[in-house]
Length: 161
Image (cartoon, rainbow, N blue to C red; front, side, top):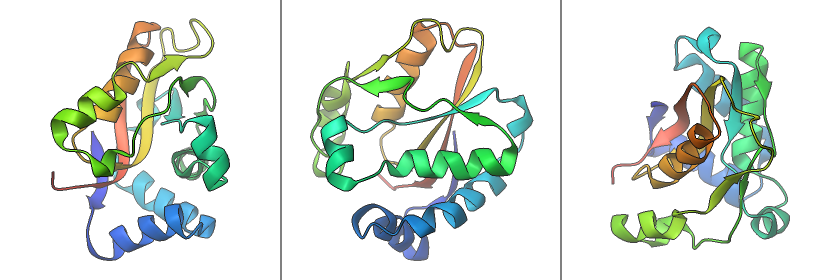
């Protein structure tokens, strides 16, 4: 797991503006920051954004993880497997829950949309913020169950707890 930085200060404000003030223009600089924070992108076959539930994505108007993944992918000259991992049920916002509830909240919430799409591939899962790792773990389980060789995680920021 790699993070461009801690979830604080200017980085926290930029992520907040991207997500909640719909500042999509911030996705590219944040994605470039993420790409610069990780070595070995050449050992990755494809990037996979953490999916939002379709209702949440429609409400927000975009998936911030997809925008970040596209920016990282463009810098690294890699493909993005958008829509191949899906959120199959709505979950509560993770930032409102304690660590134990976060794990329960996302358990079984993700599935592979197309069988064997990840088979034999080295995947880089992309998200905006990692707190407990519950979402990343559940996404990784679904991808690995489909036959991926491995799943690494890249986030814009890591929160303290």
